[in-house]
Length: 428
Ligand code: FES
Ligand SMILES: [Fe+2]
Image (tube, rainbow, N blue to C red; front, side, top):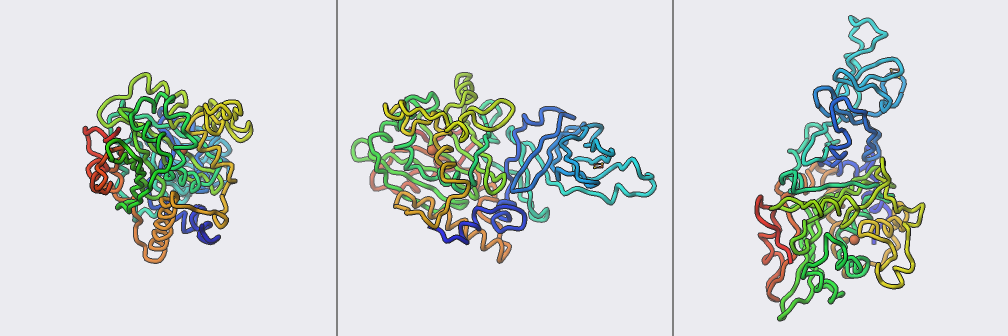
C-alpha cells in the first residue's frame, strides 16, 4: 500500500515533477530506429514524459528530437518539410536544424540575425541496437550511452518491439516484477507458445504454484528470485532483474532467447511497453523472428501503421470465454503480452494504491517502490544520481538455474546474473 502522495510521486512524470526528474536521469528508448528509416524521411510525433516532441532524421543522417511546435505561431512540425538538413515549417517557412536551432526566417532580412536568437527545446537522440534513445535531463549530468545487452549483441541476435499501453507506467512495470502471476495468468501458454515451450523449467513452473520469493537489492535495482521445487531436493530458481527505473528482464526458458521490457511514460495515463528478445550467443532463427513479429512470446500484434494492440480495451481484448472455461487460456485473453496489458489496463489509468492488500509474493513490488521513493528523495534533496544510470548496472541478465537447497540464489547465480559477451545465458 502507498499513501496518496507517494502514489502521485511515483506515477507523475511530467516536467517539473520529482518522478519526472527521476526518469530524466536516464537514457530512455524513444523510437524504433525503423520509424525514421532514411535521411529526409517524414518526421514522427513523439510524446514522452508528458512532453510533445518531434523526431526527424536530416539529410546527413543526424537525428533530432525537439519541441513539436514551431516557435513562430505554434504549428505542429509534424507537417514540416524535411529538407536540406532541417525541418521547415510549412506555414511561413521557418527552418530548424537537428539541434532545434532556427536557421532561417525567410521573412526577415538575413542581416538581422533574428533566426540565431530562436531555438526550440531539444534533446539528444542516438541510435543503439535498433532503438533511438534520448536523454531529457540536465545536459551537465548526461550519463554515458546505454549498455543493455540487448542493444550491444550483434544485430541478428536481437529483436525489439513496442506497443501502446493504456495505463500508467508503474502498474505495468509492477507486472514485470511480479513473477507469481505466471503460474496463473500465463499457465496456458508455457507449453504452447513457440518461444517458451519445451523447456524443462516449465514443468517446475507448472507443478509448483506456491513459489517462495526472495528479493535482494542489486546495485541497479533488485534481483527477484522465485524458488520452486526441482528433483532430489534441489530448487529451481527463476531470477528476474529489475534495474531502475523500469527495465526488467524475465528469467529465460531452455535454449529460447532471453527477454524483457522497458516501460516508458508517454504521459501519466499511458506508456510505451518496449519488449526485447535476444540470444547472447546465436542469431535468432527465421522461425523465432516470424513468431515475434506475429505477436508470440512477450510481443503483441498491433494495428498496422500504429503501435496500438489489435486486442485492446475497445474490443474487450477479444476475450474468448470458451477458451477461458476450457483452460486453454487462464483469463480468456490470447497471448502473454495482452494477458498482462489487459489486466493492468483494467485497474484504470492510475491504480489507487491506497486500497491494495499486498501479500508476501508482492515483496518485489514493495521493495521496488521503496527504492524508487528513496532514489527520488536523494535526487531531489541532494542531487544524487539514481541507481541504474551507470553502465555496470545495465550489464545484467536474468537466469533460470537449479541450485542445491542450502545455496542462496544470489551466490549460486552470481556469475549468471552478469552479462558477458559470447557467454551463453544460464537457462533451464
Ligand atoms: S507558424 Fe511556423 S513559420 Fe509561422
Ligand atoms: Fe505476465
